[in-house]
Length: 398
Ligand code: AMP
Image 1 (tube, protein in one colour):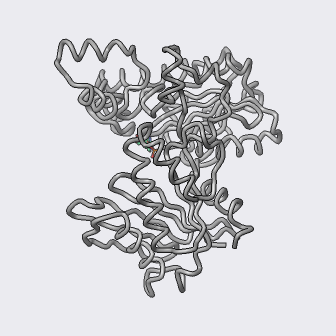
Image 2 (image 1 turned 90 degrees about the vertical axis):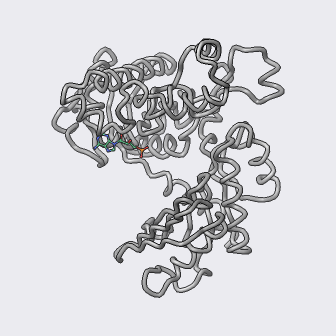
């Protein structure tokens, strides 16, 4: 069974084609600058040379057509015909309270993705365009929506309700939803396998450009740090994470900034970039800090501190923790960040294996054999998770 996984952003489209018999990636790639001058497709067929195509792509429909052409290209392709694509899995940002699982896309699902555009104004419209473009290019091929919010739908109401007048929850769907759900689900399932038990208390830390922590009990999410939107919670590459909401009024009054300007500042100019004034990339900050840059050091310290506090809060919420999992760009690749965080968690019974912690980008246990709380680095694979959900929902249809 061959499954195409598609992740549409406002001007980009990422894809991976899987052979689900072996869970192997046959090809993957990225289209950038869709609808902007200088559109470019980077296509990487497994075991073959990479191909870069620079060609105007006005819309996601043009981009999908181009991707499909590459997949069957005599030189760079990996399929003999488009008919080999059995199903398409789409990453969709926001499924509101409607979807706790992935679903086969039909008119009702399209309407729901549209309904939640106010909650995901940048992503949901792009996701819809991608779905419609695929439906046109691959008529009759079943498609599945995999929501970034779905895994967190098991949170109890006391964890997701905001303490503002209840009518905003009822009328405007304002509550915590959480994101990175596909990643938290993937690594928590993998950690349960490594622990040899489904009955576990886990804290999963997805630390990348966007970052979030989830508390997972017996496979179900009990709390997570992102909120109505991905802006809440941890300090991120360019997002502020949790701040006192009163900051907005003070800036509006003193700096005469509009709501949109403040929203843009909180999402794009804040986080470790905002504190350091140097970069949103942790590699740059680690280097600058080593060279003595104090604000880079402060940004990293503040980031680590917030992760430590959130893990502590979730250990309390779960009344204990069996394992902590690190994933995503920083979680998988920064021994420095992991050490800074884990050495503040000795009170929980975390004992770091400093030698194991030197490894980057591979699945490994980084706690000592005697550590009461196990710590794993588990590389996330959201695309494979999307492909697995797509296969499970569509295999009867094919
Ligand atoms: P992601 O959003 O999961 O792709 O993570 C991207 C972030 O991971 C980048 O912004 C980097 O800051 C970080 N990252 C990647 N590799 C490393 C590394 N070797 N050391 C520290 N941070 C890294």
